[in-house]
Amino acid sequence: MTPDEYLAAAIKANRDMPNGSFREGWAAGPVGMHRDSDAYARSNYRVGLAEMIEAAGIDPEEIDHMPRTGPEPDNDSPLYIGAFGHWAVGWIEEILYRADHSGLVAAAYGISQRLEDYPLLDEEDATREEWEENHPEDGSCYSDDPDCCS
Image 1 (cartoon, rainbow, N blue to C red):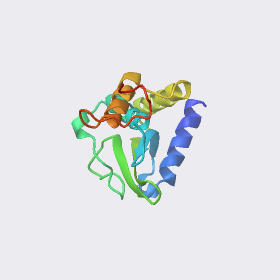
Image 2: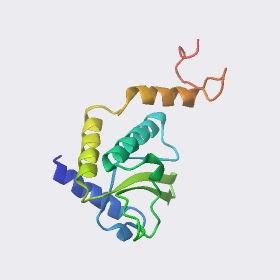
Image 3: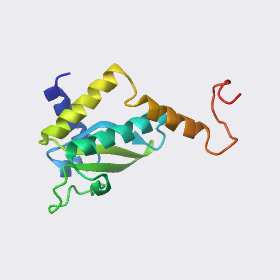
Image 4: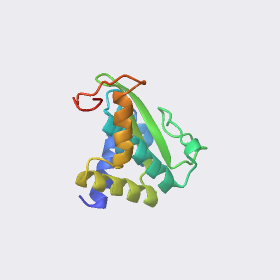
């Protein structure tokens, strides 16, 4: 997939989301998560969001959820978190970014290409997330791996 094809698909993904018509000129992706996401999806979302925040050149504390009616006119942030209710998975969070922000488009495309080559953006982070999921407190183990806690 070329960068232009990727951007066209990301813009369409935004349009197809709830209230997408309010976000003309925005794109969605390259990673998201939902209520039932596994440890790897949560890790990819966290790592991907951090990379997108860095590409946007904004303070991580300034990232905000986009209002359902689209971005506020007086807020020129190129990056938001889109949070939507969903009948099948409860809720969805997606990264929403301005389709004309070349740094964010390049970062999103780069992330998508890395995920085509390997399913994890950061193996160490994913392993830590998986461990925490399987060991929510000291002495407990919910792993399916029989050798995990032996």
